[in-house]
Length: 544
Image (cartoon, rainbow, N blue to C red; front, side, top):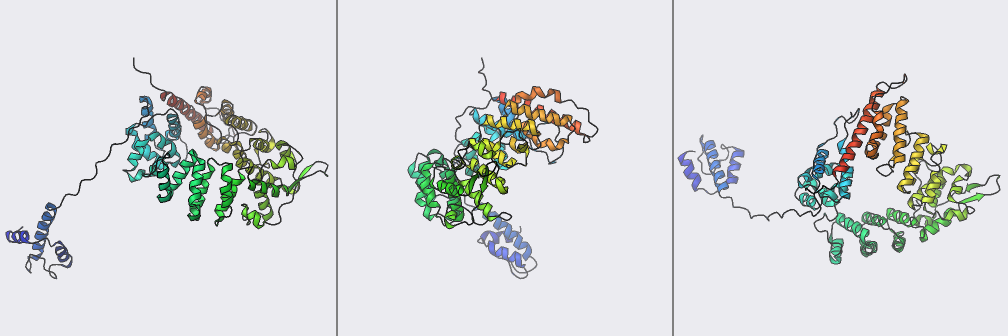
């Protein structure tokens, strides 16, 4: 910088905007401040800008200091055993292969074991190691199915971290108490303030949490503002009443049948039909009973159906959708909705005092069996009626259980979910022994983990039979994946005999024998790994 320019620049005020303008327009068109026109002007502009830059930086006023970050809250739960902490780090470090398909090899898929590990750690009440929290939150960010268990395990420190990193903000929405203004459920004033002033997501979270603790208080809170809520919000709020649904909710739900929104009316009707003693259920029972009867004039008694000829205003008010979907007849559409919403206790008295098993066994005239049985399936699931579920499921060894039959496999899976875990496992084991694994995948998905011994043995035996028969192995990859996660780890010792590569039948798929051996090797390795995981979570013995 020249001495003259420096002297001038030092004496000038900060004309930064003028310097920028001169630089943009050019010194031929705009002489910069503190410089003379001519060939020296560009150099003077740069020198003056440099001096101004130094002056601006030196004169920068320090900002007010921010509030000191509060320490992360303490987690009072016991620390993980050292071996379990190392296992968690390994599970979180594993990433699915990039290939997406093809052969997986014999190595276990560690990320698929993480949900079970989290469930076991939560059951034992352990706290997450602080150093594992970032990786745990990243894993939960990428897989929504992990979030409930991961956030429960991560504890209060996860919420502390989530407020510092936008990538983890999902934790504030998903975790109970994650919102910054979420009140203590024992604080009535805080609850009312959040309900009246909170964001929609905060209000949904509040209502759901309150419903699980005090169903009546949650309903009263909703009633106070119901008339002023938006239709889409009313629908979400109404859906929260599914938890703890009981007879005390009937009066409010009956009023919701007159709502301006069709979706709200339909949801209210669905909830009322799940209460078999409700007035709506009684009305639907009368309508459905008028459509179904037993014809005793035939050689063999049979059920006859006279579907409704119209959908009147009263039916629509009670949740019957008048317009049938494409491909469905109107009358069968209306009939299905009536039977689905009618109390299952309607039918023994209406159909000659028969039991559910006897009713389901009756032939149905004129091709109405599929529609009628499907509606009874939906009613059994909605009303959680185990007796009707058993009747509609039938014997697992029956030929029709494997399909097509009057009840589809998808409907059977939903019916199984109404039974206790032991009964579910026994039914599916019987199904596999008779019909094999090809149709059992969605039925296995509703069975409790780990699978009960009879179910585990049935799955392994069926896989072994498929292997010995030279069946196409890749069609069983879904069941094999389920077995890795759901078989009891104690079954590993029974599978050692299946690790050898069998002789391939002449008609077997090329390479099938080595694939089966590899798949069984991965299954055994995964089961032993799961067993080790559970053992590592046992409390550590104190040092002597």
